Length: 280
Image (tube, rainbow, N blue to C red; front, side, top):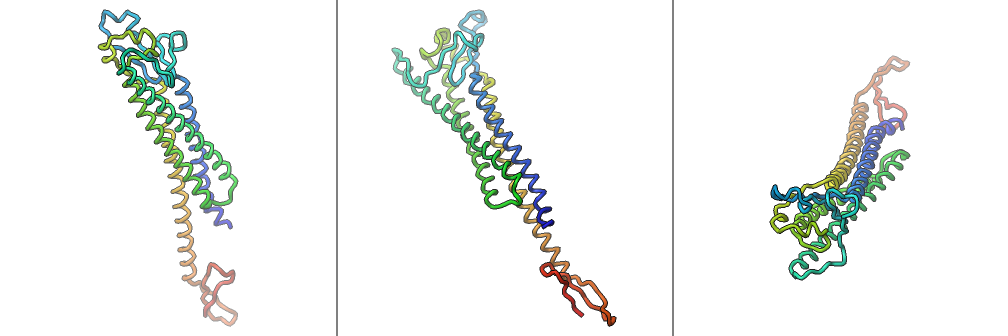
């Protein structure tokens, strides 16, 4: 029993550390995603205006999030306009309306994928916390716990894939957005000339960085949990193998004893019986 407990202690602490680390990484991913959605500043559009127009209101920067478009000078209120996810403002130009409708669909897809990635990260984080709770109270590792760890790690991997897909959609949507004419934007932005729109620079801002942090956190969590599980399995295998080799070697190497008649006897130690095996 003492040998089994000793064999279990090292992987127990290793997986406990991995479980706590994974839970914290999951909380980081969930927190940064919620913060990024709430911050509402994914990109900042910086128009490349001629020097003579720099002082004009038309050439100021604007920030955009998943749900708002704001002048850079008043991102907290006032002049912000709300993005449309259903109702489409029609213009007299059919091509612009079709482009706007397609972009709204991309924008909606981006939001849905982000929300689904957030949901998977939250579920995986809760399950990681459940694993830590049970792991602190178990007497030994088991196949069920190994499968549980693999499922949690796979949830983090799938969440990371959705984060990547959402970031790709987000980048495509924001690049298309800078040259799109739509009535849902503020008047100062629709008044930009086509030349200014085409030379507008895109600078990714706080929310975009937070989304990348969430992506890195979920992938790191999956790697930590996978590596911890592999280490624990290899440690058990190597410990059991070394114990078997040691017991076999001991049983083959005799010790010598002398009986009352003065005869020398060989004593072979065996692992299963309590009494040694004697041979004269």
